[in-house]
Image 1 (cartoon, rainbow, N blue to C red):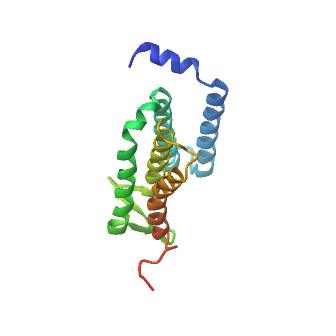
Image 2 (cartoon, rainbow, N blue to C red):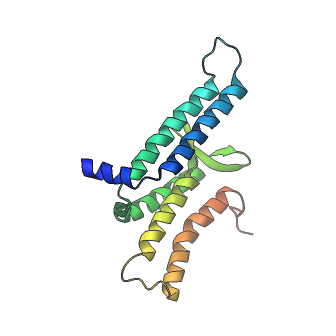
Image 3 (cartoon, rainbow, N blue to C red):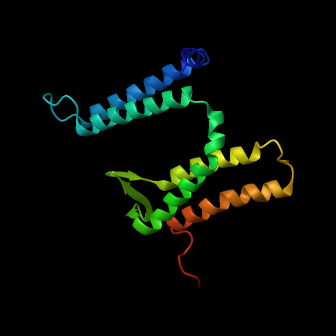
Amino acid sequence: MKRTHWLAALRRMDWAFLFALGMLLLLGILFIYSASARNAEEALSEMSRRQVMWAVVGAACFVGVVVADYRRLDDAAWWLYMAGLVLLALVFVIGKAKYGAVRWISFLGVQVQPSEVAKLGTLVLLAAFLSHPSRDVASWSTFFGALALMAIPMFMIMRELGWINSYAG
């Protein structure tokens, strides 16, 4: 990545927001550390280590999103949407029941909730769909097209949650 791209990303950064975000991360880690501390010999509990690990992963994702050119998502919109639908379909095949609904799949030992991927893919596809230069956003066909794009993952998620029965009648 070009140095000028990094510098431009740093210039448009909201430093007050970044400071507040860092403080919230630090407070979260400290709260979990204080709530899970067992003895003075153990530096960090397992729960604290996981919180630190996910804070680092989240910070890396944040940096990735900040420096990425979001306009390139337009090319990947359909791929993201379809990946979300495939993951939602996988839930019906290999899904794990948790909290009263079958909505989780195990991926490399990590529990993943495909509905979150599907929501992100749907959002990106809707943005690409509605921002297309030839699209008249005031037309009914655009409205129903956007509604159809949202309906497919919505019904799959509702079925996962048990709001729609898997049988007819």
